[in-house]
Amino acid sequence: VEEQRVDGGLFKSLFERSKHEDFVRRAVDLLVERVVFGRSSRTSKVVEWTVPEDIKKAIDLKPRDGPMSHDQLLGIMAEVARYSVNTAHPYFVNQLFSSVDPYGLIGQWLTDALNPSVYTYEVAPVFTLMEEEVLREMRTIVGWPETEGDGIFCPGGSIANGYAISCARFYFYPEIKSKGVYAVPRLVLFTSELAHYSTPKMSAFMGIGNDNCVLVKADKNGKMDVVDLEAKIVEAIEDGATPFMVTATSGTTVFGAFDPLVPIAALCKKYNLWLHVDAAWGGGALMSRKHRHLLNGIEMADSVTWNPHKLLAAPQQCSTFLIRHKNVLNQGHSSEAKYLFQKDKFYDTTYDTGDKHIQCGRRADVLKFWFMWKAKGSEGFEKHIDTLFDNAGFFLEHIRQRDGFKLVLEKPECTNIMFWYVPLCLRGCENEPDFKERLHKVAPKIKERMIKEGSMMVTYQPQDDLVNFFRIVFQNSALDHKDMIYFANEFERLGKD
Ligand code: ABU
Image (cartoon, rainbow, N blue to C red; front, side):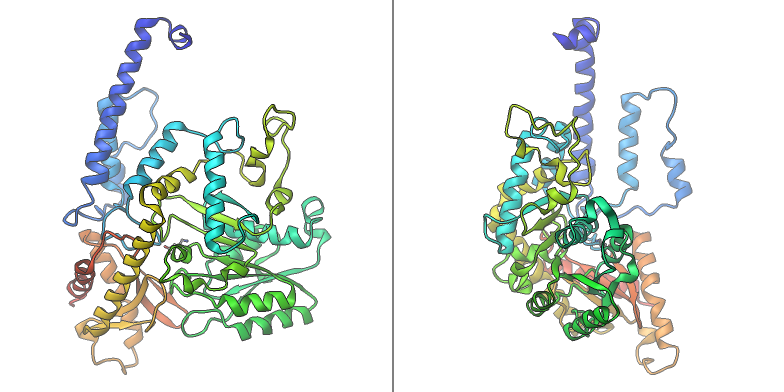
């Protein structure tokens, strides 16, 4: 009745409703037909490469003064989809995320349809309880006692790693919250030279300074060198600084290496340091009985970053920060805004969880992951993880035997495989002085060809003295061994000259 009055009468209200309902139905059909299913077959393109000028011509990007018709809007939707990268495509293996899980997608759509902001129980009752349950389950999987700890959903792993620094600092120096960096000694933290860039970045952002984020050497397999870690801790103490945390990585961004958590945890105990494990990428392996040993020792961590949107293939973005200490998140970040977190509400206000976060408004990233978990069960996630590792192992052995491929790491631990493709013209030239320089140019050229053809999408990078090499990443369990052979064939075809 209220809606009818606002709209000025029953007739107008019904008309508006059916007009919008019709638009939503047509738009959803278009999404299902053109975006979700229409583009994910192996024969469609991963990307329709287009230069910026042509995208500007194809899509009317400028906001206009007047409205567009629904037909025009549907046309624009189709164009947006057409020129966007098809990350659901089986041959999008470029990044640490890919694929569209149908349950995750529906969870995401349901979230958007309900449009919550998860800060108080009164506006997000189901999501608040769902977060509590999912985060508790994840902590149990990490190996912490069920009664301990806390956790939050974050906008990405970088922010989760930032929360770790903030919580560690607050845990040792609670005065930081009111007095700031002036009240604490020169704090130093440690992470591997191959760790994600977010740890130095967040150190700078939080006033610690990235010079005080000391990079520890990695060994030839990409794992943190524990001897160097201890040497650097001692060096920092002798230099008058105060070490306070180590961020270890379970699944480094490029090599997929797992730092040795057991000896790192022992050092943290010896020097009274907070241990954070950035398992944004590798955390999914915890769901597999076969592969969770890669994270042995994670139960000794004080906090963990784990992104279900990576190895577990939840839709972007689904990132968590888990912490073993119960009240640190809230005490370290709360601000007690009177317009949201009134203590005299009629219900139990411990369910108003928003003050633990540095964000105010916050999407409910939990639902899509929870919905996937309901649909597949933990068993489904385990099968998914085991398939990924099986495919990665198959691809590794396949290219190990195949001419032209040279592995960067003989035994990668996760589902990223790193290699050079050496074209025929460079084979046998390995000892020539310009070999490395020429090989460095191969990956960008092959990448350009694959993108322009849209046949697959794989990333490359240099690292220290290693010239450009490919990193192919598997986290879509719809792939099979035939796809692994397709990838190898594609490198050969695109790199033939
Ligand atoms: N954490 C994002 C890493 C980006 C990538 O290499 O896929």
